Image 1: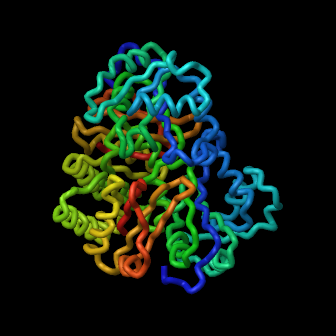
Image 2: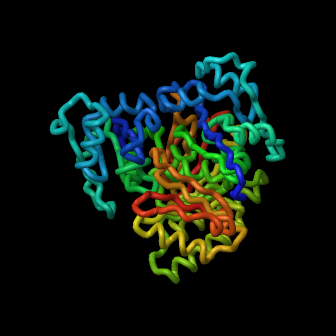
Image 3: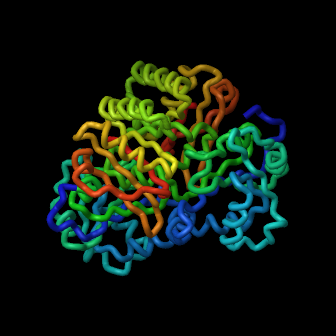
Length: 241
Length: 241
């Protein structure tokens, strides 16, 4: 939006990638997304290897080696000059993260911001977001909510943060969402049950869209009376309300 | 989750409804959603008339008059006994709002919570959410964000709230999202440009998924140098970051 003399004429397509390998595309991807992916020859991606596998599985008509792949790095320090030059020249570019929606709990926002600066068209496509699906499925307020990413890994700091989120949920009547790396899910669940008040509602949604999808939404009191799920290695979203 | 002696054996499907009438289903709905809707004979809906039109357009094989429709009211005071009895008896039930994802900036959460209490399975389906699409397209942080629903309509209170959101965006490095009723969009945009600091980023995403989709993400300074869009009657999401 620097009022470029010649705005970029390409379109940056924001492409959601399925959340689970064993989720059928027919459950998570509108048909047009496939058609759009087939028409693109350049992709900005979180990881080139898995992105190629996804685009190939999606039936892209060209050999993968003929397509152009630009990797984002974790720190957003990626050199975006090449894909932005394509956009400027009128070529369309796809942006994808490893799973879910690019730029939401995942890298990609910097590319979108740069595209806006150039005056390129940005088109977000419909697909699966674990945060959105978890919020829908929680039965908690979707009128006000906040997403906090990852919480501190130190046990004491995590407990403190959980108390803060519980207070915020009550004060603002807002559902509080966060995520955890799968190998720490069990510790997080223990910490939640030990820290939160009995009448606070906790939802855990894991393996969303997969055949093994598992969702529980109940008060802490009720959680304590039920057998605990095995959350090991399963991507999960946690919600407090 | 009252550990019912006989948990409900039905599934509550959470069905996203297209955001715009002129958005092709192939752009917003995975194929399986259609198949699931075709298999349901009972729906909890925000408005029975428009829900029937949607289900009919979706090609449901049964006459609309043979399906069962249960309307939510605005205050969540709806008598849910009948649809919950169906779930208990093992029938599957669909939940839909007028547009977008049920329970997210829309009614429906109380039905989901009741289904969890009965031990029914809750299955959130993939579809279009204006909040999620706007966040992806904003180029702002999707690592931390908060959604605030509608802001106060009084001009002074709205200004105060906008200043609070601007502060929260900076303090927490969190994108702040909110919505407005379309006929107040122009007043909201004026208020935003008059209230926020020049280097604050503002995104407006309107008519998402429709052919008329329009998205701008720029600093307040840049917004002031560009011609303003006509936002009248166009559903919009506002983002501050």
